[in-house]
Image (tube, rainbow, N blue to C red):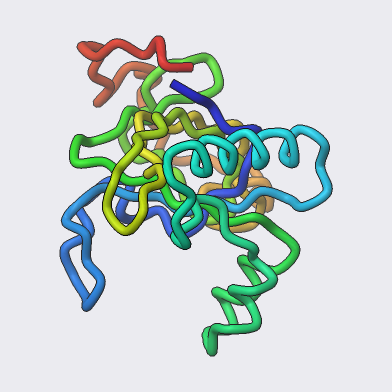
Length: 183
């Protein structure tokens, strides 16, 4: 098992439900992330993943993609902005991945990873022989390190008011039956 350096989550809906819609649906859970180019830890990590891919056959379907190339080739402005100046990776799995906070506790109900959140991803590099061989990135779990500021989930702009107060139940909706030792 391997863990990414800090990364930014992309579109995260399919982290919670299978990708079943559209022309390229995989019927798997998946998450795309971006890692900043030029960061020493990221560059070392990228080289390690690409070496594993090369050792497994080195076909054209690289597990780490150049975001600048993606940005030039897409006609989607949001996709281009997401990818530019970054390395992009997509992780997939048939099993629902573990999603935990920075202390390895399951995220409470209502707290979800969203695009732009800072995360780490736990994954396996699985070799395959098709199309000349390479590796696929099998998603195990995701650790939420920081919520993206200003995008849902931020209440900093509010002042406290008199009114409804939710009961303090830290474990509401949290299951604790899975092993979270992947991080």
